Amino acid sequence: MPFHRRLLCSCDRLEVLQSDHFIEAEGNIITKDVCVPCFVPHKCCDISCHGSMSLIPNVTESIVVVTERGRFPLKGATFVCDTFDSLTKATIDDNVFSGVFPASLSETVTYLFSEEGLLLCHHISHKRLGSSKNMYAHTLEEVSKEYKRNGPINILLFTTAEREWETCHHYIDQEVFKRKKIYCPSCGTKPLVRLSDAIIKLRHLASAGEARKPENERSKKKNMCGGSAFKAAREDSNENKKYD
Image (cartoon, rainbow, N blue to C red; front, side, top):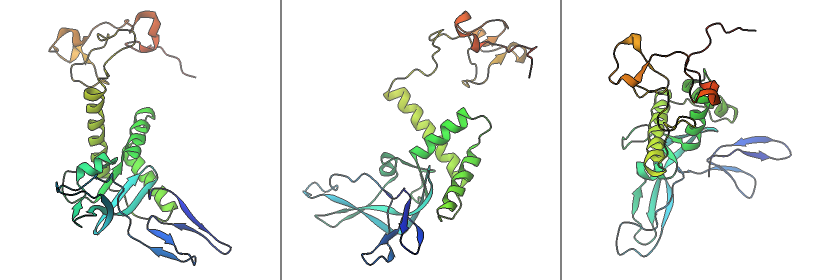
C-alpha cells in the first residue's frame, strides 16, 4: 500500500520518500509508477482463461487519491491477464469495491477518496460542531505539504464524494444490516418528536402552518422523551438558563 510515511535515513541525510520513490541496493532513490491499489479479479472475462491476473499501473492516467493522511499522486490501475496478455482498465466499481470512492460517474477519473478519510470527515463534522468539510480538506492539504506532497485538494469533488459515500453507507445500513436509525431507546419506533420533512434536526412548529399529519406538529412544551429517564432529550430548553 502506498499510503504510509516512509523516510530515508542515512549518516548524512534524512529525506521523506514519496509513494513512487524506491531505493536501490546502492542507496540511490529511483522513481517508479505506482497504481491505485485495487482488488485483482481471479481471472479475465475469457471463459477459456485458466491463468490469473495481476495489477500494473496505467502510465497514461494520473489520479490523485485522498486519504486521512493527505493526497497521494498515483497512476490508474490496469489488470493484465497472464494467459492472453490482455489489458483491462479498472472501472469505478473496482475502485469502490477496493475502498476508494470517485466524485462522479465519469469514465475519466482524476480524484479518488478513501473510505477511511470520508468516515473520519463524517464523524468530525457530526461530533465537532463548527467543523466544516472545507476545513477538513484544507487540513489534509497542510498534512500533505508536511510530507512534501504539495498540491491542492478539489473541495467540490471532495464534498460530492463525501455525499455519495454517505448515501452508499446509508443504503448498506438500511438494506444489508437492516438497521433502524429512527429508533429511540426510550420511545421505541414511535418517538415523541416526529418529523414532517425527513430531517432529524428540524421539527414542524404549529405556528408555521398546518402539517400534513397532525402528529408531526410540535404543540406541547413540557414533554420529555421517555419521561424522567431521558431528561436530556427535553423538547424545549429552559428559557431562564443561567450561564457562568
